Image (cartoon, rainbow, N blue to C red; front, side, top):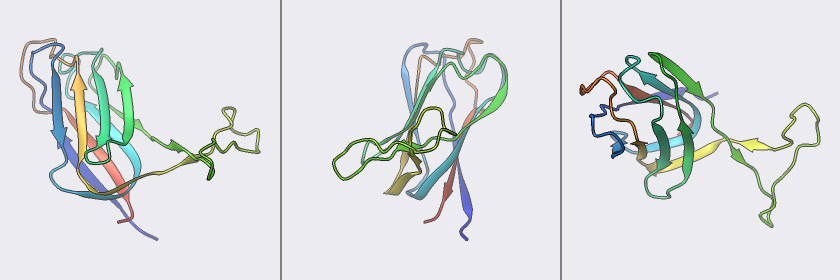
Length: 142
């Protein structure tokens, strides 16, 4: 059984409103994405309309894309998964009715590349530059 490693990326967003802010893991990441935690330091730290797009830097594989992560100070967790496909590229559908969507989710791999966190429309509502916002990446394997 492997262990899970956490990679924390601080995301200080300035008051530039709709501008894009890019942040990266400090080094290469290898393994499977288990969970992502997005922390807003305060209700006014990052706009409630901010869009977080998290991708693998070299492959450009989208790991998570979310908007409106909340209006209060909080730590919100996401558990991103990809849609499995067969050798013809068609989606594999579950045979159980337990999953209403019918998709067959699989973990998202990242192999020896940095993870990029892009925040758009995230200008601080309070007009301050905050350093207490961060994104935690929980990676297994590797």
